[in-house]
Length: 448
Image 1 (cartoon, rainbow, N blue to C red):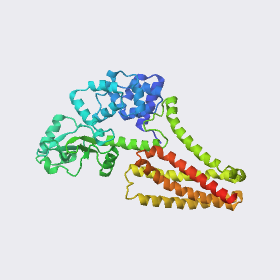
Image 2: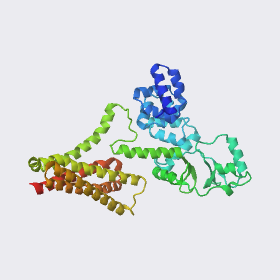
Image 3: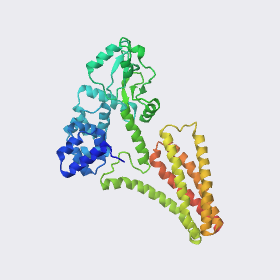
């Protein structure tokens, strides 16, 4: 596969640093976009990442800091003085600044807030009034508002005087004299309509504004289903507060996807790949401890059938197959259900159907693979009885795996526990214990 221009720039940059050509490296680095620089820093060990950070133009520091994960962000800010931190916020959008401040220690937050002017502080207070994972926390206050009674010619002259539009501006927002949201005026409509037409005649009233307390996941779904580039944000009284743009929604979608994937390993989406060994080990030790506890539970079940295993050696050879099949089948169901919950596809109305369907899938796969394993085990050990026992155990375990894969995330959500983090551990425990218990129990019953 040929290298992209960005990959080529990365390679040239790293080669320049290695050869000591720092001046060329600095020029090359500062020609990249903030997101590309952030990706490069996150893709390097701390020492090399720090070199990149030191070469970075101070004007770009704020943009890069909001793009990197929390752990990398704290590492880069480690040696920065409070006045330097205040300086990097100058070019930040209000929503990015709000996120940035919430990640700082309170002492540093106070100093950064003092450096802001009155207008910046007002805008920031508007965003900080809402949770970080809500539409209000995502919004930016860089809106261009117009009145419905003016003509498009007046709007065009106003925009020419401004000279610059905020990023991701595909529509202007129409409000009344009290800042109540009325609709939007797409830029394409503005440019292609007659100049003496009023805004009221051509504005779009179909775009519904998003309430400020809407969750960020729901915001992402609205953008996806309505193919939006930007959307106005209002309070409960229909007053315009700001707007959300597609770049912020992309971040939400990415964070949600990373959260689900990393959560299944007991990690967070902010975990730094190149973090130091000791803090990384400490974080993972908790998860390993939980898994060790569940492993002991499975071992305790095995211990109860010590006599069976001692007398029928075949059982010891085959028992892990039952637990393994159940674990994989359960994980498939669990992953689908957690994804469905994240996309708000799982509701009270369809839970019964979901349970029935997944149990049928579990039973069908259970019977299919039970017959395959029974045949192999029967031929391998020349014992048809052991073949039927493992077949029955696999069918039982896949039934419970399917049931648990649906039930566990629903129960965890009810208890306000994140299913992405806790679900896989509980599921593995269930499938291990049920698989071993059914296989060893049946073996004791029919072979002893």
